[in-house]
Length: 178
Image (cartoon, rainbow, N blue to C red):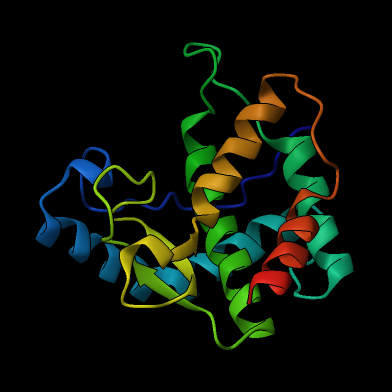
């Protein structure tokens, strides 16, 4: 599938390196910038989808259309086997932000949060959807939707058998946890 990028602008987080290795202040600033940019990123995703014949929406059918478009379009980097083409990491980020907002829209007790519990946690210093927010770090259940979308993309380009309703399935799972 050929993607019409229609002026799609790559998101630049303003930091270099994995978020979990950055000083807390720098990682938190990246989180704040991302949350401020979130509405514009979702508009950018909608524009990209529209250029490719897909309407961005929050109902289950539109979520499935997004999933189908992503699954058919995501591309690996021929120069770096196992990695996505660089532009696709920005799309992954935008899809994650959109799906996270859909989760929050459907379950208002959820929220975006800068995750700081457990330096060995894969989501450390990432933007996550908090599911159960207690003061005890061992109960800080979160959904790192950005990582989930990236892993899904890697599985697709790796030729793995993937769930064709993955995004919709995540929404069903979060409904059980919310």
